[in-house]
Length: 293
Image (cartoon, rainbow, N blue to C red; front, side, top):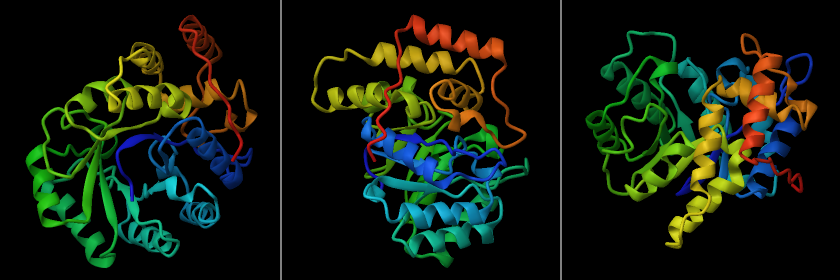
């Protein structure tokens, strides 16, 4: 089960024909863990989950189940369909993947607390042993979780064990005993930990793994912070661009595997890519590659 720590919303790597490169995707996730992460979340928004078909997700799950780091692998669903969501969770649980990051269905701007409540209620009724981390990202789902609603869900459904807060309206004020709270940005890591949060789940941890882990460990050990300013500066640099486009553009300079994205996503323009790289170079930021997986 997912616990306190620093996690990436890991990238999905595609072939030229836009099919999911399962082996490369798992190898990248393992590399991130070897570089310091407590674990990775496959098929979050950074992993292009809404755009990847169900069969490809299942293929990755079955392959990941045999990996030596499997206990550090977690999954999002990224499905608008309730039945597809349940289908994928049931499949993953056959491989003992029990913790899932689940966003309410996207697209419909008429999402209500009653409707979203029923969405999670249906999942839990069909898969009673699932453990759920809610995904609070209004920009993508058209729904904003509010603290009182989270408290109701957590009270009614012990299966709901935490929340990823990418809208940032929860991490400062939400207080529920033994409930995991993960802001979605490195800029919130240290402050969140000071407030009692559990760590972060972040897109940019694909490249900031050693820095983020250092900040987390130094907080846990009550040591002086030496890397937080740099970690925040790197994140703020990426925040000037679409995060998926920026990550793949930057990482493709070191590994051609990252050059493909599923439409409608695109890489940065040549000018934007140059600007991003120059800014990161100014910060003396270098991605460590550790593919010993």
